[in-house]
Picture 1 (cartoon, rainbow, N blue to C red):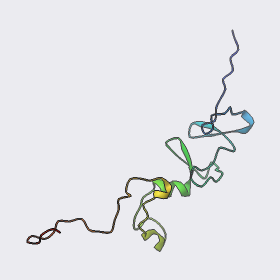
Picture 2 (cartoon, helix red, strand yellow; picture 1 turned 120 degrees about the vertical axis):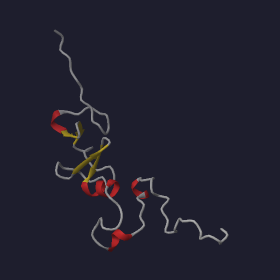
Picture 3 (cartoon, one colour; picture 1 turned 180 degrees about the horizontal axis):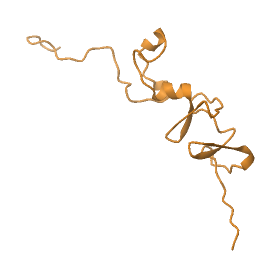
Picture 4 (cartoon, rainbow, N blue to C red; picture 1 turned 180 degrees about the vertical axis):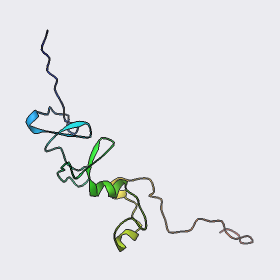
Length: 111
């Protein structure tokens, strides 16, 4: 019976991961140096980890990028802004404006 070696590769850099430097998360194996947040690049631990579509995020960045938006979701006046999350890579919702979108009253010509 031939002896076969299975090389396990890092989910981030696709380089071989050796047992001494292996971190398991989201069903994959990572180098300790590759095990960091996609947005802020902070090193992660099992208690600060949130995974989305195979990417790793710290809980703060995950909540900012994928969490609920709007009034009542946050902690203070800073949550009332019109931030669409474009700096986080979000593209949907970037057409948000403060102008109302309704038909003009009858009898008025649209300009």
